[in-house]
Length: 101
Image (tube, rainbow, N blue to C red; front, side, top):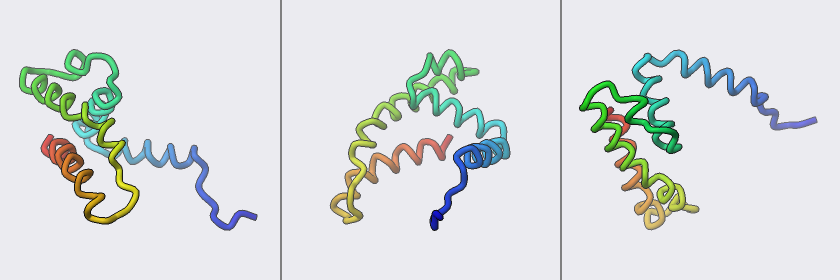
């Protein structure tokens, strides 16, 4: 018998869908837009922008998200400050941008 039972993946997916559905519509839209930009799907400006301000925001987000592959390669293996510092600065920049949106 397994001592560390985990919920079935389907249960977890349903829980995540319920949580996503509880977000305001604007938050859901930003998350979908961010996934399109981060995964480099289609033309995010054409799909998501409603005005010039949003177009500029999407372009800035795409430029910032362009560094995500490099950021994922720099995830530190240990928690020492010397290892974490080069990772945290770019991560905080991305997080600050997303929170500002």
